[in-house]
Length: 316
Image (cartoon, rainbow, N blue to C red):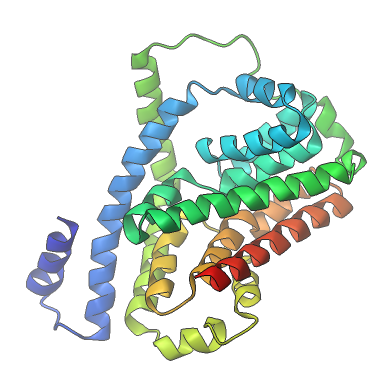
């Protein structure tokens, strides 16, 4: 259906000549925007309904009962199903610490929540197949768990700002029973909220992806981040950190880069750097974490992403 719509708009309505760079870019844009928007609406609604069964109080209760290793694993897994960006994940991170959840466990959640995005998972599955989607999840889980374990073993609680342990998270109190109508209404409202926040990022991401798809030659990509460059993964991470986007917004760019010959591991490293190591995240966390812990967190996650990139480039 999306192919047909893109063809009609590109060749019949706009009357663009087949085979030109501008035609390829426009068709890519007109195909991906409605497809991603439809997937975004459906998946965010489903995940929002699931989220009503996992309020912050229950999440913290689950994590507090586990031993440290299982807590890291559980926190990373929960991060997949909590549709937070970095900005909204940090208040829950504070609430976990205030409730006595170990620092390393909360760090695993903080890494996983923005990095392993449920929307990106579905989009990757639809665009590249289940193998890439599974690799994306397992890679993000590995980085989140290992980062949390390292920081937890380092006993760096003293490098968390003192006010964090005195904050009472908003929304505390007895859990309210919700009917299915309430859950669906919440899902609709959450779709409206999320879509209003990300639709422009998705469109910009698709636009950049369309330009790369239509105009950037294969030689340019492979020269700086191709298989022959031993520093390709590191370069991808360095490029990704200054950018800020949710995972869904990076998918069109990822798709275009992979079509241009960028290796799978390098592509995943770029995507994880954009979603899990952004400068806005650094600025926000600077108010919560003291410099030593902040740089330890970013350094550990960056090394994990680079390792994953090289590992999957080697495997595939």
